[in-house]
Image 1 (cartoon, one colour):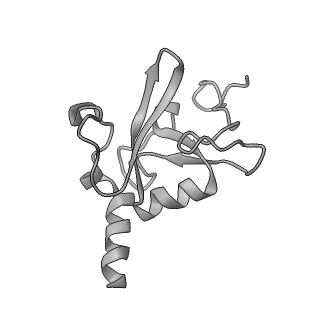
Image 2 (image 1 turned 60 degrees about the horizontal axis):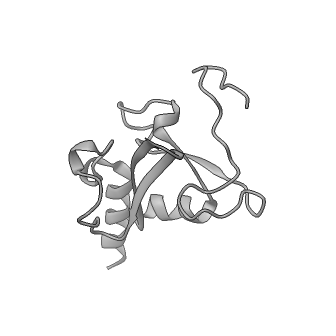
Length: 118
């Protein structure tokens, strides 16, 4: 596995969408910044990046899916997310979320788009 030039971290595998699990052989994967680049808290390391297919990337930017963060697990990297407006109650406690939905510009832009369509 190659290392990224600027951070020295391992490059993310683009073999599979980290949200819907579709194969990278079927579609070209995108790399999504969880905390957006327009936010001063944004960093370009693997803890702020998710590999997603074009459909999931559109869902994240429109607010249909919300990425909470990237966490390590016994099986490796895990991107936690939820679909819809209300996160599940048994989800990871909010104090451990990397970014809260109400602070995420992607979510706020999605809400504004929904309100403009009404």
